[in-house]
Length: 392
Length: 139
Image (cartoon, rainbow over all chains, first blue to last red; front, side, top):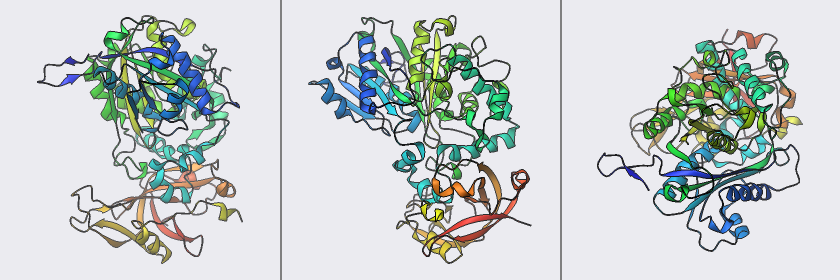
């Protein structure tokens, strides 16, 4: 249950809940399976991993921007004693934000086991510019920016990266370092889509999409599903897998959340507000973080989040990713599964699964030695941020 | 005609004066009627003083480059014939930002771009109803 943090009636979510089950489908580019079927396959895997059956799930948090609604799951599960349903509408920051929401639900006893599933046909279904146009949170940019030619996240985010480069001297070589590192990690993951080795020269030779983003600065569009189960502390101790504790969580919106264009500082994301809250809740420092899974829709997004997380001052993220620091064997191994850039795009639920796997010590050749504490971030829509710090 | 495939704005009750202004080749922006804080994009409430009363004023359209991107890939088929095209984020002298294309990219225009570069607003009549903003480098 929740613990008293001594501040006079306030409670902390620190270690009040744990991830008790994880599941993933195979990731592919090309499927005839629906998003719902992919969601159910991943859910069954996670529920089975937790030693549960679908009817033990009494709470779900579905992806607000996705095709699947809670009722789809309850109907397929034959649920009879369902107690909690929510969405955490923060685009790509949603799954990590859902961890905090799920922890609140199980810590208070509102629900016992909360499922966070996500399946999508991002490659085989509607492509990104059509999906974005249909989302209400993009209503403002759809009216004012789409008509002048900004129609997809690459075009919305590129000016953030360009300004970062102009202000701080961040380089395309540094972005390439992120892409090359993710690809190297993907090579150690047999469920990663892009495993062919990549060099900085390959990155620079890839075609320009939205300057400064080249093709290899951009994440994949893929098909597949991933899911996790979050359970309360008391139950978690008696479940088959070692509990991976949720010790610190936070979410944050950037200033001017509806339009990057109008943001006072477009190089500062919602994560900059969320991260200090999460570190304080967890009671850990940056030096304690053994492994990081950082939402990588674009290479720049990793650079910027490393700053907003507080691993380095604003403007020094480019230098931070140099010299192998974010690679396996480096000081902060990052996206050990290959990330959205080279594993698959499951809106970062694959990042949560990977962090749990690392903290369980189940990552084989890509295992970070002595991974006790790690963090996972989400980044979404027009700069929303989320973070969860976990430990074994 | 490719251009007819482009997404067009659908003005709302909130944004109508802005679009009507562009159609008349005037930049008309919203500000708070109480504390006079300008805001863009149009919306009901002033985030500085929470007033729901607004008014509109004619802005200069002069500004400087805050950031930019050069689109080499069209994510909407209506823009395919335009690539590569520059999208500028501009700090308007009137206190808000605006995103609009740089008029006709020629050769090394992209390499001329830098933070703070002065630009001037122009008007692009795309239909009888809709005029879109665009910028040209000042001088």
